[in-house]
Image 1 (tube, rainbow, N blue to C red):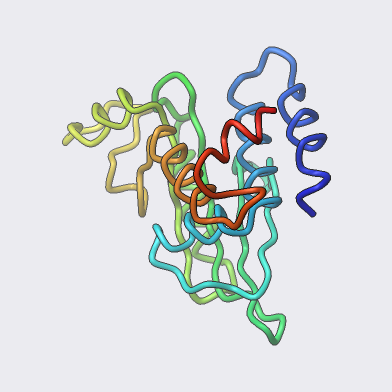
Image 2: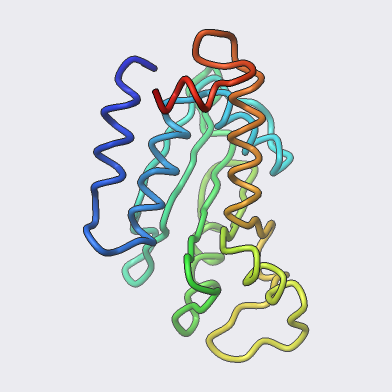
Length: 181
């Protein structure tokens, strides 16, 4: 529950030593897991239905040669998986290993859930460059390789709006100051 969230966030922030990309992924996953409104905001942004239960996982192997930074599975009341999101994260641009996005797309195509999304979350400057890229250079993926490209700033906006919309004392106006305290 929310009472354990501060400790979990501190643990996530201290994970992965110098690897900022994986540390940011762990913070993102922990916050999605502990704050249902934030999770629902991301799902809504991707035009997926609200689920009864969400399962967030990081560094999930989706094939023998492909690992995805974060997966978010939504399950219905009957326990059936209704959607799967693969989320790839970068903190310094949008460079991908050769064929990475194609392998992720193929793995996602084999997921049994009905709705599927492959998204990328990158810095705002890289998002602008990616969206302006019409002919990708290897190993750069074109923006249309993903179902949605978000900047980390978009994620911050989703989180802020989710926090403002959550009831007090954990949410509402001034929620960030109370959280930091």
